[in-house]
Length: 126
Figure (cartoon, rainbow, N blue to C red):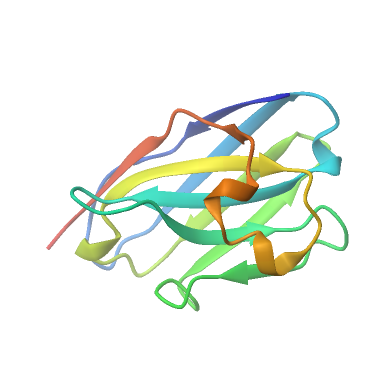
């Protein structure tokens, strides 16, 4: 099991930037693909981005492609989500999650992840 703690959320104006961090503890961090998901008020949880444990390849939701960047530092057991050009529709609670699954196509699905953080609120004002 992996324990995950997100940080870095906050209030920002549209067009601004935030960097979220997710610190992991427990078993070998490098063995896990790490994903970011978000849940906006009144909406279902949705996939944002994932970075694989092997090779570090990434995948993004169309809604954030070109604006968000996911990265990981295995030495620090941390995954990051750099969010630029933020929009009011990016307002949500952001969650990081860990999975030992390998296939990129299923890493966009929340049910593929076993371990989740508590979430961090991101609010983008217009």
